[in-house]
Image 1 (cartoon, one colour):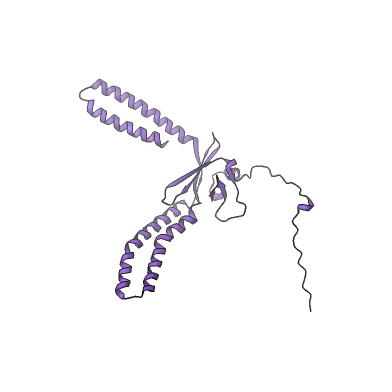
Image 2 (spheres, rainbow, N blue to C red):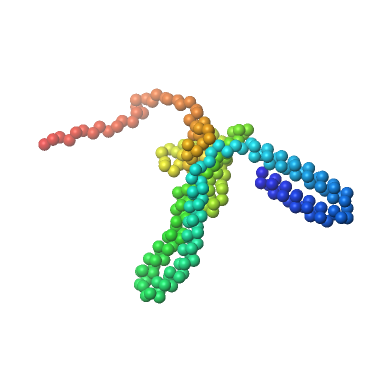
Length: 225
């Protein structure tokens, strides 16, 4: 989709330059160039609309804008802290503070400068901001935010999803071994949420042997003296 848009933009720019050069000297060539470029532009626009129509947005994370703004503020504060850190060290040296106090100030400033963006990313990197569905291929396209605020897309099918072995607060499911977290209430249709997690499939209950049963320990009451 993006390659076709870039190609169409380049073709339009080439057409404009071609038209400016030959408009006064070769009117017939300019007319041919105009006809060819307009036809190709229509074909490319139809292809872009067709590709967009195949994917339907079924999920929009409510915390997506807040996470993005939080990361932007974190990067801005880190940049400010990195700029003022030499001045803080210089002031601490001028005051005559001890070496331990200077190291402590540098450690605190470095923590808020470098560690805070990393911690925010570790907490929010699993949050899905949007999910698109392709009915033709039965595929889902989940979007998460990378460390540098670039959208990262993970394309998967329902059979490529597995649930975590233990219940986790920040992981809803794994898509191609990528941990993802979604809000069930943010889906336009809850059926997609059930299909992704496999809740639409029938459950099978198998009877286990008595030898394989897990026996719980018996706790005896303490003897009263």
